[in-house]
Image (cartoon, rainbow, N blue to C red; front, side, top):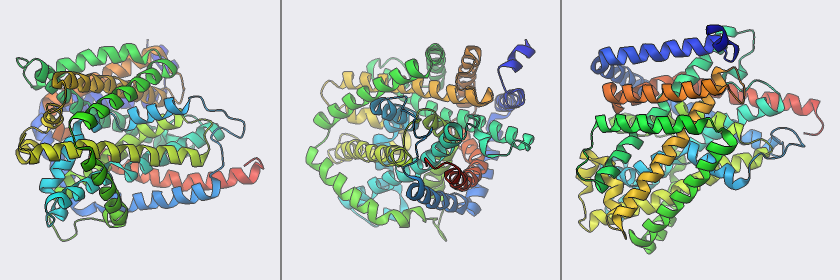
Length: 499
C-alpha cells in the first residue's frame, strides 16, 4: 500500500506534510485553548515589531512586476504558439472563485461598516466622508496589494512551468540539489493552502448557518451545526473534484459568476439607492487613488497597533498564505496569455470587481444603519455574520435573497475546496497536473477534517494566528522568486529570438 502511494506522490512532501497536519490536529484537540493564547502572543510580538516585513516585500514585488511587464509584456506563457485553454469568461470566472469567493459575501457589508466605526485613521471624519474613508480602506484590503501578490505568484509559476518546462510545484525556484529546502518549501505551501482555505471555510459555514437560520428560525447558529455543514459540503466537494479542472471547477466557477451577478443585481435594484452607489464609487475611487501610497506604507508607527494588526497586516498575511493556492491555480489556467494580458486580468479586473461589489453592499449597509434598520455599531461587534442578511431583509422577497446568497456561498465553498485540493494534489504529487484520483479524494477529506477540528476546538482566532505565522517565510520566498523570474526571462529572451 505504501509503495503504491509513493508511486504517485512525492513521498517526502506527502508524508511530512501529513505528519505536520496530524500533529496540528492532535495538538488542537489536546491543547486548543492554550494554543490560541500562545499563538496570539507570538503573532502580537511579530506584528508589533516586524509589520515592515509585509510592507517592504510588497513594494519589492510591485517594483519587479512593473519591470517585467515593461520589458517582457508581449511574451506568451507557453511560447509564441501557445493557445489559451479556457475562454476569457471561464478564465475570469475561475479567477473570481479562487481568489475572492466567500470573503465577498461575508465582508461585503460588514467590513466597510466596521471601518466606519472603528478604523482609527478615519475617526476624525464625519458622516458620508467617513464612510467614503471606510470604503477606501476596504478597497485597499481587497484590491491591488492582494491581486499583485496573487498575480506575481501566478506569473512566476506559469512561466517556469509552461516556458521553462519545470515541475508545477511551489519549490520550482529552488535548485534541485537543495532537496531538503525544496521539500520544506512545498510542505509550507501545503500547510498555508489548507490553513488559508479554512479561514474562508469558517466564514462560509457561519454564513450558511446564518442563512439557514433566516429561512428556518428554529435552526440555531452554533459550531455543531457548522461542523455538520462542513461534512456535507466536503462530501459534495470530494465528488466534484474527481471531475477535474475542465469540468467540475470550470463549470462551478461559471455558475458562481452568474449566481453572484444575480444577487448583486437584486441588491442593487431593491436594497440600495443607485445615486448613492454611483456617488460613493466615484468619490471612494478618487480617494483610493490619491491615498494609495500613504496606505501601502502605513505602519501605525508610535500608535496603538491593534487595529492594523487585526485588519491590514492580517489581510496581507492571509493573501500571502493564499498565494501558493491562488497563484498556482492562476498559473495552471493561464497558458497562452501574454504577460500584459495576464497582469491586466489578474490585477486590474478583479480589483475593479471588488471595488464595485463593496460599494454596493457597503452603501446598502450604511443606508440600513441611517434608516434605523439595524444599529451596525453593535452588529459588527456581536454578530458580523448577520450583516449581509440585515441588508437582504430590506429587498424584494427577502427569504429568496437569503436562500440565493446561501446557495452562492455553498457553491463558492465547493469551488474553493476543489481548487485548493487540486493545487495541494499537484504539489504533493511532485508537479503532476492531473494527480491520481485517490489523492484528490484524500486531500479533499483532509481539508474537511482539518477545518472541522480547527473551527470546533481552536476557533477562528486560532486559525488567523496560524495564517499570520505561516505566511512569513512564504512572503520572503515570493521576493526571491519574483527577483529570479526577471533573471530567467532575461536569459530566456537572449536564447530565444521569438521572445
